[in-house]
Length: 194
Image (cartoon, rainbow, N blue to C red; front, top):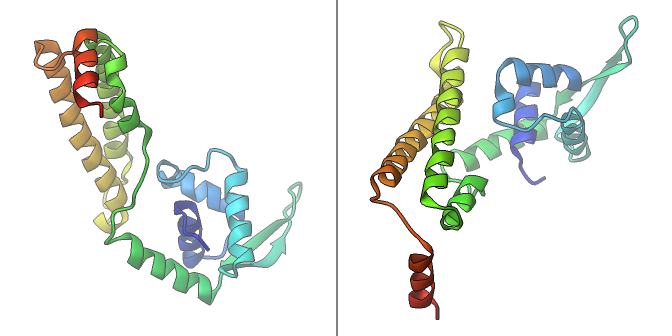
């Protein structure tokens, strides 16, 4: 099975304890791990779990029914699922993934906007990044061991690095150290075209 962040998270949850998909989604949200994987659509967990079952990495266990609720199947991890989760960890931790976030793509075409509009938009991004950092910093329960916060620590560090970079670019735009106009763009296109 091709690894995915959601599949990995579901296997890790099943390592903790067997559970039904709805509970998995609840735990993901309670722990703030919905910032790591996209589970906005409830069906995402069910689809990923179906793939894990088809691949033999998880299996259905008992089915329960509570009064007034639909039947719920509890899933558990298989030996192969445990081995796969460990293998994925051993692959993912040392090797940076080739990811394709959209912000660098937008930056590649910043010259299509004017310097003033770019400064204003990047200023708004600064505010959004500051809010994200504050949210991450504020969500950790006191006394929780660092190992259980390591992904949040990493995310906050990456956001702080972005924040510093953004502030530098906005300062350069404000001072005129970074600027462009149509003439510069056309001259650059002419100079660097083959």
